[in-house]
Image (tube, rainbow, N blue to C red; front, side):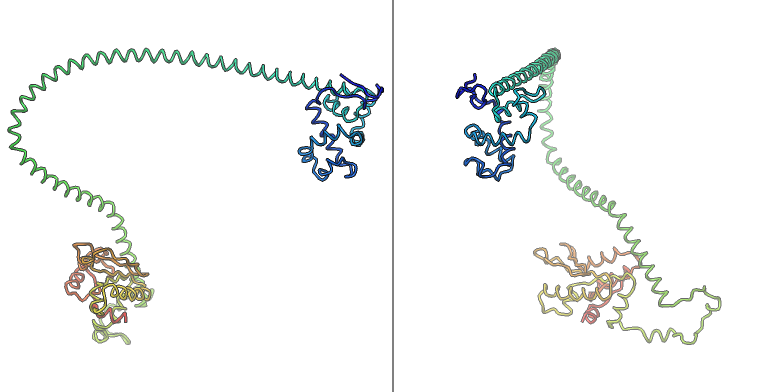
Length: 447
């Protein structure tokens, strides 16, 4: 319905829209106002819109949409200015509306929004027609969506029916299998009842025999218990031996390979040292050189014996440690109690280990220091110094025995020096191939 004002039927400004502006048309109108907004000065804008003059177009559309639509409806001068900006941007569409026709290919919403802004004669009809067209489009779209939803629901219903049919067939099969299984269980139950009756008869017979045997068994219980304890003890020993055998089998190969490799390195270093010491010529030995004689400049055995070092000379320890792959094993408490017995055991250990670390750094030899751990009430919190291996004997094992185990663990031919004043230790390691050195000699070398 169109109302006219002022008696001018051909003036579009006198027409009034009798229904709310359709949403689609309203959005297009706000966009037209936002596009033309930027071309106006602040003075040309209505007072309520001047605060949005510096906004970006998208932000202006978002926050000032309602204000712009209200200003366009109430302020004819502002609407005229926006219309002029629109005519500059869309001259073809504006000219067609002024001529009273709408372009056939134009979007009805765009045509209605332009008519609402420009207000040509008959603009209300264009806006109303655009609203009806939008409603028809919405209805068609909703109808299409409803048809698609209905089709989807039909497909789901068909799928559910098919699934229900398969599930029913499966349940029928399961029910039939359960029925057969129940029948088989009934048969087994009847058979079990018969077996129970026979078992009860056999049980009564066995109980009678048990009473007869029980008297005889009581006499054998004590003997069996003692035999069981003995067998358990033997079983424990056998298990311990088996575990030790397995551990030895696992570690045997690596230990033997290590011993052989260490011996090989020792032989190679010894051969290179002998070659350097003897300064052997590259030629082979001549037959004349095998004749026993004294050459000019060579020492006789008597001269060599005269220059031999004393057993108590610390220099002999340096010569031993200079041998290739030398290993120095120190009887810890034997050395400390020989050199500084008045100090507490803890300070004795720290002083000796500090001196041994310096010796290891000077000679490059492997150094192992052994302490007796039998009298320890708790584990010793000790950080071994660089280059020194520190070992404590286990409960029930003396430090002397641990030293002998270390010597036996080395491959034959490797130079092993044991520092201890204990004669039993010295004799034992000498028989095992090691070189014993008195504790006083080590103390002299350290100081």
